[in-house]
Length: 317
Image (cartoon, rainbow, N blue to C red; front, side, top):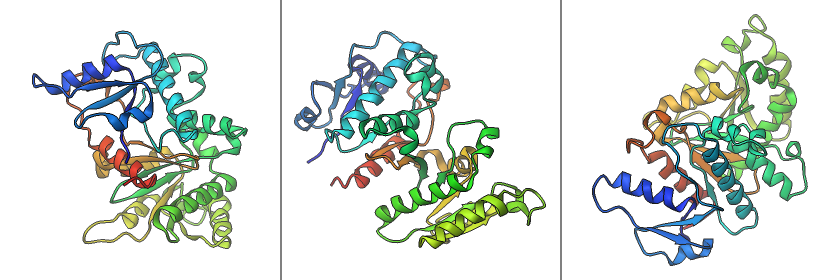
């Protein structure tokens, strides 16, 4: 038997429960002192484990250093608990990266969840972050994509398109999807230039970087295809009722190349899965939406999907 609980702030969850209820009786919020107590919570109740000191008042939709620090504290606790096997999986809510940075050390060293989780996992294994490479996979029923680089400027992301980084992404993706699918995954690799470089006319990254990485991955037994022009590869990989996709996943060369098609297909259905960690971590495929924060308008669908995917990956019935 497994149960979900919130690692966060008790009063913040109670305020949110009242707000979402909209005048109706809100769901009860239960204070627990340890993860295992969530198993004893009554049905239709939200168990909350208070992480450290309570969070003071925060204005919804505003960048707040205290809120950023609290969010970082909760993620750190959850990562460490997962690494200790006290919890089976970790589902993170959206985090505001500016607030996390405003919190100061140590959280300002991390652009987002992924890098913070990577650092905690590496520390637990006595490794440097570089020795525990991770990748972001965005997944829905229609499409999966894995990113070579994550949170960096486009200029820096293009510099990150190296044989080593592309090959490492292919290795991490292949290992993760072989476990998830229980078969060899069909992997498509997007080019970085228009028309995948058009034989070197529009850039030589496909010839000098991406193709050599693909060749090395194939030599290791991978079912890898490309480089494929980025304006067509996602259409070819997309799964639909009348069009089964040609590939199980697309390797995108940088953040927006992979996320734009994913979010266009439906933010509510997408789930972020971190590959390469020694723990299960998923999250919704959207941000904090400060423009509607505190108004009870946000859709919970992507968070629900993230919980479902986490349960499947952790093999929880």
